[in-house]
Image 1: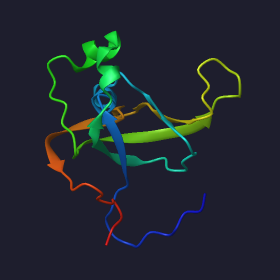
Image 2 (image 1 turned 135 degrees about the vertical axis):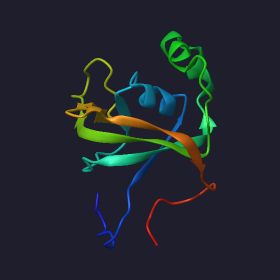
Image 3 (image 1 turned 90 degrees about the horizontal axis):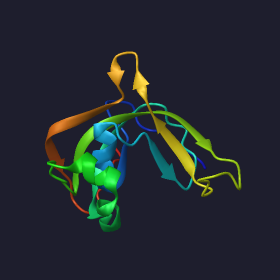
Image 4 (image 1 turned 30 degrees about the horizontal axis):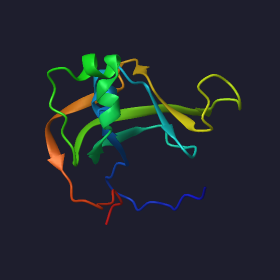
Length: 131
């Protein structure tokens, strides 16, 4: 994967994740995000709740407990999380899907996730690249 240099200035990368998984990350219940390619980022990223909701996940007991009483905002930046690592499970291991695992953990200053109180709506097909 090639990475283009980014312009100077203030900017932050973002990652889109379907609900209810975005909320699960913000509550600390979900600490790993599966992606098809490795990421070299080890930094804070914006958490964008995508337009779609993973409806079957809403019936999972752990997810149901995690989101109880919470509004599942979609199409908006709802928080930030810090990516602390990335690894791929060995082929054939339990839970291995060939995906890369983005690890979100705790830092010395506390949890590596923060919820934004007033979600910031985004347009469909919006890119997080600086202008």
